[in-house]
Length: 329
Ligand code: GLV
Image 1: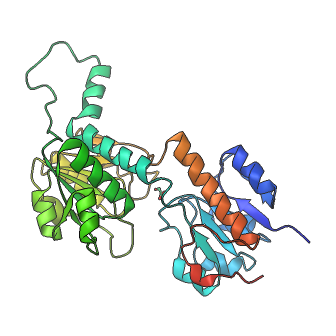
Image 2: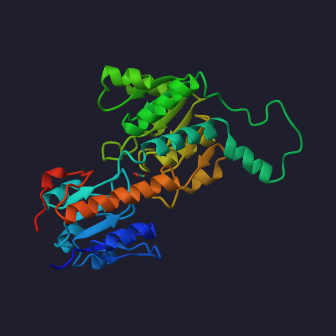
Image 3: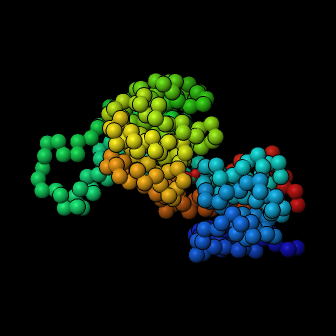
């Protein structure tokens, strides 16, 4: 019997590629070339599986051009790079990597919020420029985390992890808004209280965004929402570019409409709105919220587990559209 063929679309841990080679004919990408949509289609010819990251767009056009494809396995929890409706209608399984990155990503969201509130990037740059000549009572004074109000927009697994850290570790008052309200016992366990979006914006001292990117969530935070926040508030986005209107945010930061922002994700990344580079009160990181060594390895392993199970008659651990199972052969 011929072995299934797969494409590993980006460079990943060599150990994980070796494991995939035990089951599949693997075309990998150790030089980490970013394929154009046409190159991706070409590489996927004759492949039943694809190991992807958030950088590869899998839409109707690609699926029509790659009729042998049976499964796309994203090494990410977010999957806005997938057209799930198109995948499902073609009977192609999509999988992602939830759970394994929850705590690491919550750690990072909390760290970015703290770095933003306490002006760590701005003060480090000042020090590196050699401008630190004396102590001053008001040098880089920021806002407190402990005892303040933490607002969370989007209350899935990562949002709940951030809520727990704030409520239990830092004595924060935690409020959240989400499409659906959590059960009362979950709210109690994570120490968070449900509020409407207007209350969240008005009351949060530190607002953290942890919601998935969908057409509905495009620019959920724009000029109007920023104007509704406290002028002393911080905004942290570890969710996806496009959820925040980055141009409006840069303007709000410049005008001190809000105090500061921490951004790990950007509209059009890895490019970013150049205005964000010209405002001092923003901490910028290159989409690394899940990037601990252990967690990136766990994500790669789970993405491999999904591919192996899907193409060898097993049960994929984390399917996005399980309705397509069992896969056609
Ligand atoms: C990272 O952004 C992910 O979705 O895993």
